Amino acid sequence: MKATALAHPNIALVKYWGKRDEALILPHQSSLSLTLSPLSVTTTVEFGVSSDQVELNGHTAKGSERERVLRALETVRAEAGGKLGPARMVSRGDFPASAGLASSAAGFAALAVAARAAAGLPADPKAASVLARRGSGSACRSVQGGFCEWRRGERADGADSYAVQRFDEKHWPELRMVVAILNRDEKEVKSRDGMKHTVDTSPYYEAWARDAEVEVPRAVEIIQRKDLEALGELSERNAWRMHATAFAANPPLCYMHPNTLGLIQHLREQRKKGIPVWFTLDAGPNPVLLTDAAHEVAAEALARACGAVDVVRCVPGGDATLKSEHLF
Ligand code: DP6
Image (tube, rainbow, N blue to C red; front, side, top):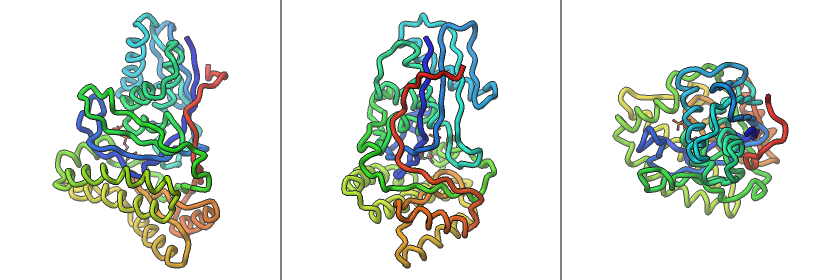
């Protein structure tokens, strides 16, 4: 009745931005990501305790955070036959507070794998991905390691909207992602609200969704042949296009800071000098640089030269896994 799992965050190279179903968390378009090590979240779930308890990073979760976790646990109870009783969930991330990456993706992936195991359900990456998706969309891509593709799916109930691994973490071990923390402030508009606002008001939204859908198979083909320059170019244009839809929302939504643009400009100059480094950018000011092992030190140095207050170097990460040591 008790199980613990560890999962890594992921960074999207073709982003998810916009839902066609808010309640089920169904996206308008497919997306593709790389799972990142060494950052991780560990989660323990136990069923059959006296009352539901949700603890995140040492704090009792409240409001919508608690609701999202309890909903996921309820889904597991229903699948297991309903007689598991209340649950205790404790989750801890090893992210530096300033990592600039959402811990919710790793958190819901770890929760999905741990809760299913605690309920006695069989290991099933597809079912765990669907469950993680219902907590936070991008979490469905953290159940497995390496490069994962979240297929939008067609069904209204979301049963065919989950992530599949296209290449594992050993496929391209020299690839590096360097997170450049330019600003530690909490963002004003969360991804969830920002994407809804974009879907509702941006005249570019339809074009964005159509384009992202066709970029996914292109990215898969590029990753297959391990072409860093082609992947860098694709990642940059996808990030620009996601941000362009947000700029065009009404009122406009801009996640970039002046030094975000400064760093992006600097990358262009460095590439002219032969340093292979590109960026991607989620809904915040902190770019993630894409490079190879031979240039990760150079990538860190140029991020710092452009004002990064912290830098986190990441390598391709593996699957969410069950652990024998529990958090309580
Ligand atoms: C810009 O998965 O955090 O990072 O589904 O509402 O929980 P919800 O949103 P979330 O959004 C991630 C948006 C993104 C792009 C991506 O990771 O694909």
